[in-house]
Image 1 (cartoon, rainbow, N blue to C red):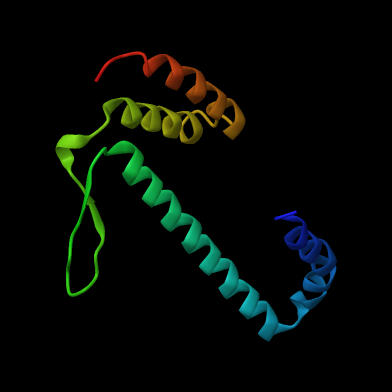
Image 2 (cartoon, rainbow, N blue to C red; image 1 turned 180 degrees about the horizontal axis):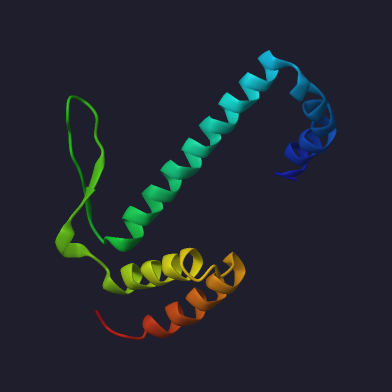
Length: 116
């Protein structure tokens, strides 16, 4: 029941959004919304990458802005190697997302048996 209203709005509104693509003002607004959603997804991906690959992060206070910075000595080599292998598999060898995800799950389960 949590996602049903959202999907209902999407299914009901999608035909109208496509019809509005011809309107330049609304098309520009939709492009801005798309760019902001991409930014939010990128921020979330970077946050997860930082907190998965490094076991410790510190907040650095610069003029009231507090970005998280990794403690370099706390790197989880297993997670870093697995992330690098996934990136190489997808970008260099053009392996799809699902096979890469499945391979990472198998190798991740196996590599988790290796002590720090």
